[in-house]
Image 1: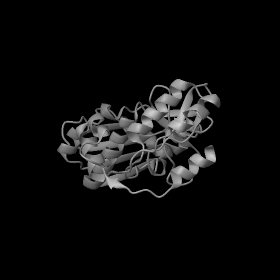
Image 2: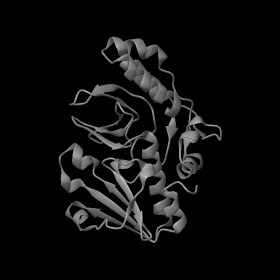
Image 3: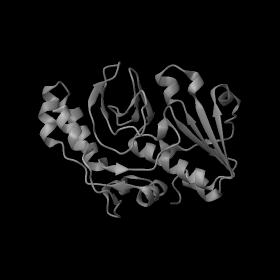
Image 4: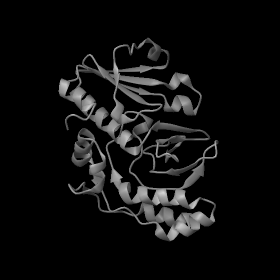
Length: 237
């Protein structure tokens, strides 16, 4: 069954620009909605109804399977530009397989990676988006938060006067005093900050997953226009 499913997911399909009436657009804040509509491509999500019984017989709880199928209905087939971390994130959204985290929580995969990375992109039991190896690390509280972070990264890179990358011990030198969290990205391990004409993207997912603090990164986008800072709270698109 898994081989058959893999073949089905690898078939060539026709990608189209995201339609104005796409249901997912109504779930996004204005700036993220504009990003997805302008930069996303999509094919009709594949239907995995015939695999539902096989997954449940294989031990996956029915409620987990149902959440995965609902994710597939909404987000399946959507492809977005890459983000600045995790080698860009999922190549496109597509439910893959299921696995259990070390804590016993059920996760389901939501898309293949763009390159060879030592983790999968997953949705957790509370809807959080994250990465999983032997350890589950929730990055954003929802898939919508992850997409908003992609939107901010795209616009910040386009409009910032300067982009500075901080790695390892240099991250400790950053002063976040006086900056506000960008709440719309629903950051958990990964967070966005704004203030004083700058946007900062802090990435600690791999550091948490592999207990490797030296892999922490921060991108500082300076000289960011005011309208983009406002987009950090969804005021403009």
